[in-house]
Amino acid sequence: MSSSSLPNVQTVVKTAQTYAIDLAERVIWTFLTAAGGVALAAGPASMFSASFWQTVGVAGIAAAGSLVKGLFARVVGAKNSASTAASV
Image (cartoon, rainbow, N blue to C red):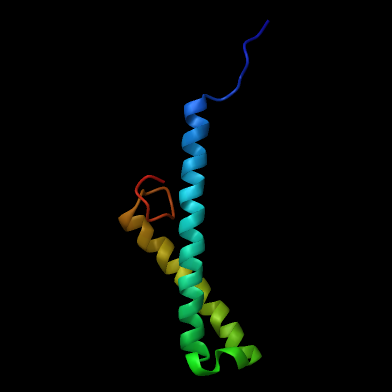
């Protein structure tokens, strides 16, 4: 009989923890970048009545912010991760 090829329990726990940290960071940064995009493109006073092009501008600003954050994370965090958390 061949032995089972299940992963080590420690590896699974570390992977789940890494995933949770990365996911939480992405959600927080996406929220902050999108909120900043709304403030820049539509302005805080008219954010509930933004035009189509203002919302497209917000999406572009959020995408650019995500790119900048990923590049910044390479300097601050691990070299092979887009996360600023050192443990990811």
